Image (tube, rainbow, N blue to C red; front, side):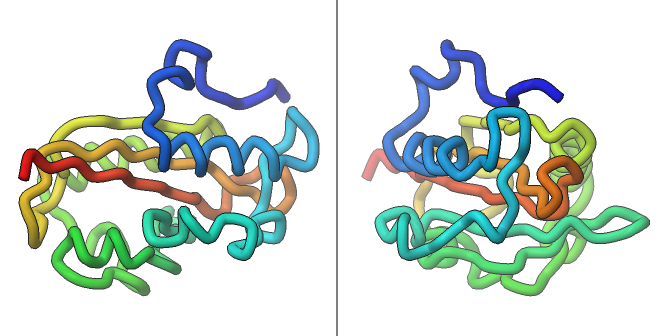
Length: 157
């Protein structure tokens, strides 16, 4: 297994909040070639990130993704709390297809993913840009069974 991380060109572009989550994920790995699991994540160690993170369970087969925990900044930005809901309950059409493709790729490869741009879903307040990362978690170090996400929102207002 190889060391899974973003290329240095991507690492250099990460916003402060997202970089904090990414750096913590790297620090939590039990070995450079293993993924951290939920058991390695301690919320007490990342208090300033908690509002901007979420945990998603990887379930199945068939594979589906369910929000286990959603930070308060995400709840405030979106149309409410999506804790306990699956992606299929929250999205549809092309948006759902793109997100599922991304999640399936992360689950299969164990590679982290980053996206910047407008939000995929309608938000309660004006958000012009979101930067988000998905960081795979694996209780056995190899098989992705959860994902840690982090989002940073920007508005012109």
